[in-house]
Length: 72
Image (cartoon, rainbow, N blue to C red; front, top):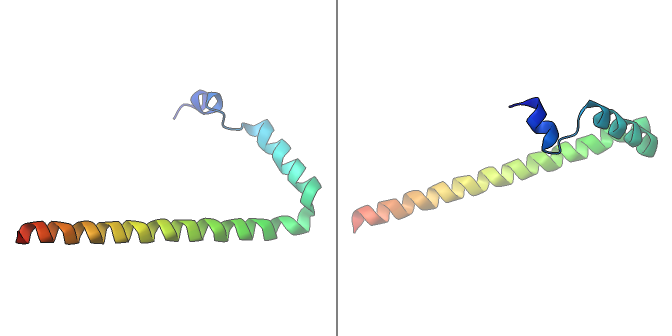
């Protein structure tokens, strides 16, 4: 992907990321950030697991409906 396109699309560049990190350090301090990131990581993992479960259920129900159509 073109870097210029990502910047135009509203993605933060290097200066913005540095500013965000500085603000986070000032707000939460160095000791609290790893704990926050751990919680964020767990939340993302649970979300991905939920999406995978939905995909499995969807493919299973699709397979069952295809088998029923073949029987008819």
